[in-house]
Image (cartoon, rainbow, N blue to C red):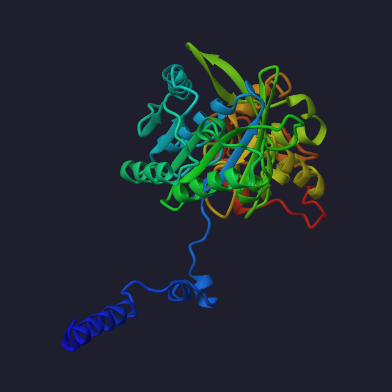
Length: 402
């Protein structure tokens, strides 16, 4: 090789080495992280958590439901998905409507019957529910990315994985590495937008989801489901960014060739002031509900007793807030009426029944029949409006008429 050729070769190598040191167009890891740092204003501008199902599922969260085989996990998962996809309230909890993807990894042979039963019971046609009747290996990030892409294309806001075990192909649920891979796959799906709802089995010892605790730590919400004599109990054991909701009792009832989860209320503890508060609400509430103050005065109960009774009635689904605003207006639930039918006075007023235009005297929690029976009558709503306009207040400690 001549001197000139050696010089040219050295120059070529030098040029190649220099090229390798040229900064890439893509940002370095440091720059990548710097671009994503949040100062105080950045924190304030983060999207605020929203409820996809009020008090139970937050949008874009990871929810894990666990329970024993045959205790209603799939009925629960499908009930939630059908409520979201139709925009129906889920057992008196508002939902944000949108398409749902249901991964029926244990098979979908009974799904048509179950969806038909839900439609019949709720008198609502299900549209926008997409069922994938195959197990997907979510220990493989590429399959998770495929599910995320499918969810994006159909606009899914909620993805149900039924069950973790069937989508944990070849993995060890007790392994931190394998469970970490599954959680990472759930994150890939969540980061595409939808809430991810994982149905899972409980541990043999009970008391939590089966397998490594990294799943518990990653979940935003954990729900325990159990069944006894057809009564399904849903209990939150973790709610990371909100107060845990009161436990919910549902009844698995036959419908067509399958079954559905219906509202269930145990009226055994509806007595004393609770019964007084509920029967009064049934008497005075119309289709617009009734304000708390009006309801309280009508019961004649002491303030603290009324508030304790109202709290119990709300927690046990005897009544609900139908206002949709910051100013609650309460009404009895249909399930509450049905479960307490044999305990309510036979004279309890129903919506649309007429009452005197001028409210009679109110003493000790009862209306005194001192009005003129020939007076013009008006619906319950008019009576409530009169109380809103001129509340009874004689200056006493609980607002009763002396």
